[in-house]
Amino acid sequence: MRLSLKGLTVAAGALALSLSAGAGVASADPLDAVINTTCNYGQVMAALNATDPGAAAQFNASPIAQGWLHSFLAAAPPRRAQMAAQVQAMPGAAQYVGLVESVAASCNNY
Image 1 (cartoon, rainbow, N blue to C red):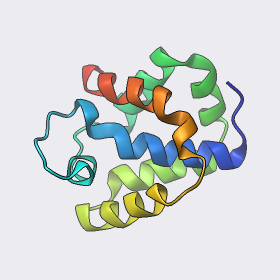
Image 2 (cartoon, rainbow, N blue to C red; image 1 turned 30 degrees about the vertical axis):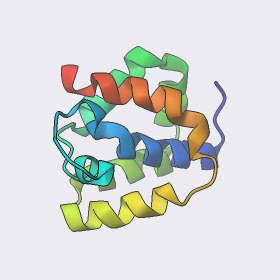
Image 3 (cartoon, rainbow, N blue to C red; image 1 turned 180 degrees about the vertical axis):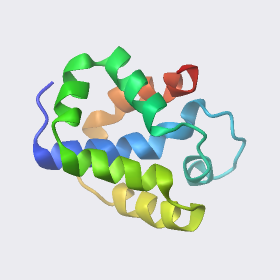
């Protein structure tokens, strides 16, 4: 998988949006679970490396994508909600759904 800089940023956002798929947080609104994820940056990156080492290498080469994901995970829930809404509006995020779902399903295992 070859990701562009924009694609890496979208992927980082999509990854952050999906982090809670494996977090076990019950919620009627999927964004509530994302906003309250328990996965940390190390867990997300370990899951990404295990799921798709090539995509992980490209992600690791992008300070912008890394910074976005760090910021999202470090943010308080109200700021995470804003960031999540911004990512949902980004075109192109859909192409990363499979990878993101795999990472989200396993990040709490790391």
